[in-house]
Image (tube, rainbow, N blue to C red; front, side, top):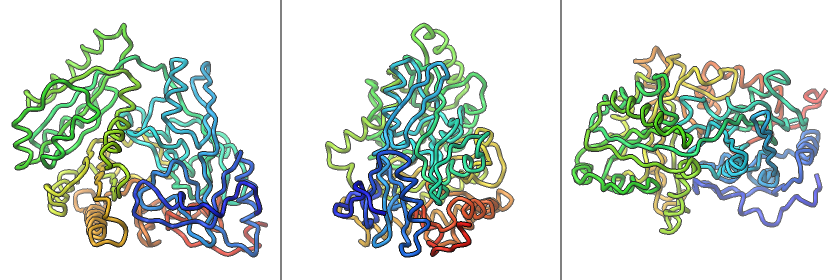
Length: 494
C-alpha cells in the first residue's frame, strides 16, 4: 500500500467540503496518475488481512454532510481531480471524460467544436464522477433526463480492485448500479457523455405568481407540452431578502415590481423560470414558441422578466452568483442544504409544512421547486425516486446558508439540522395521499442502516445484492454511513 502519491502529511483539505458541517481528516490522500493506480490500491486494501481501510473518492469537494470524507486511522481519500482528460468525439456526438474533470471544462471543450452535453447541473464546477454518482439534475432534466441517463458507458474500479468498462451491453449490472449509486459499488474513473449541437443563444424568462396552486399547475403544463421550452425550474420567494437577491446572475434591466418587494414580507411569491435555446437563424421560431407557451400560463401579468444571453452565460449563471457571494465573504460558510424528491400529490402539503417548521423571515437562501418526469429516468439505475409511480414528481431544494460562526456542534447549527430532520421525517412518512409512498431525499444523508433501508424501500434488497457483488467488504464511500466496514474474509475473494 506504499505509493509516492499517497500523502499522509497534509490531509486537512480532504476534511473540508461545501457543507462545512463535518470535518473528518483521513489517514492519507491518494493522488493517482491513472485509473490503474486506483485499482491497484483498492485491490491491495481488499486482500490485506492486516489493514481494514476504507476508501472515499473526492471530486471538487461539494458534498454537504461529509459524504466524500474518510476518517483516520483507516480512511483514505482518493483525489479524483488528479484524473484529467477530455476527448471530444465529434463524429460520434459524445465525449470521453475523466471523472475528475469539471462540467465547466467539458462545456468549454465541447463548445469549441459546436457541441455540448444536453443534461446539466445548475452549478458547473462539479466533477463528472461526482454528479454521476448521484444523478445530476437541473432545469433540462424534464426534457432529457438526469445526467446518468445521458451517459453511454463508464470505466469503474470496483471495491475488489477490478477495473472494468461497463455500459448497457457490457457489465450492464455494474453500469446501472454505479449510476446514482452514491459511490457504493465502485469508483467512476471515466464516462462517455452524450453531446448535441450547441445553441448560440438563450431566451431566459422569469414570471411570478402569488398562488401556489396556479404555480404548480402551470409548471406541470409546461413539462407535458410538446415543442415546449428547453429548461424549467421554479423557486419560492419567502421574504424580502430573497426577493432582493432574485436578480443576481439574471441580467435584466427591468426594475423589480415594488409591490413584490413590499409584499414579500407578508406573503410568499412563486417564480417559474423557463428558457428556450436557439441558433441565430432560429430567432423567429424561438419567439413563436415562447409566445405560445407564455400565453397558456396564468401568472401576474405585470411580473414577466425576459433577457437574452449566450448559451455559455446561461449555463454559467450560478458561477456569477458564486463570485458575488465570494466578494461579500458569503460563499465559504456552512450550507445545511436539503434536497427532496416529493410525490406530486404531496407538494402543496410539503410547502405548507415547510413554512410551519422554518419561519419565512428566517430563511436565508433559495428554495427551488420544479417538476420532473419519471419516464425520463431508468429504474435499473440506483437513483431512488418516490414509489408512488406517478409520472410527475417534484424536486425541492432548500439551499440555506448559515452564519460563518454557525459551525458543527453549535446551537445554531444543531437547530438547522433538527429542522432538516423534521422536514425529512414528515415528508417521508406523509403517505396518506400516495398509497403509502413518501418523499425521498436526493443527495441523501442518513446515519443509521435502518434509515437507509427505509430510503431505498423496495430497492433495498437489490442494493444489498449489488453491494455484496461489487464491494463485499463495504470499503467504498464510508462517508455515506450506510454499512460498516467488514473485516477480511477469505471466502469473499474465492
